Image (cartoon, rainbow, N blue to C red; front, side, top):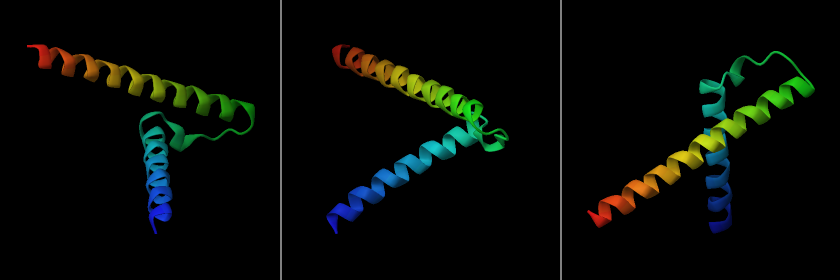
Length: 69
């Protein structure tokens, strides 16, 4: 059904982000638990989101510059 497809797409997007965090931010080898693990995860997701935001903003500026030129 259509609602299942939307839910499936959201889940796969989240899984791709988790895989990216594990691979490039070192979350694959996290051996600690509790507060430290939570802080590491939050800092990693913050860095990921900031980099994505900056990249999206840069791409938007480049596209508007190319349309003008």
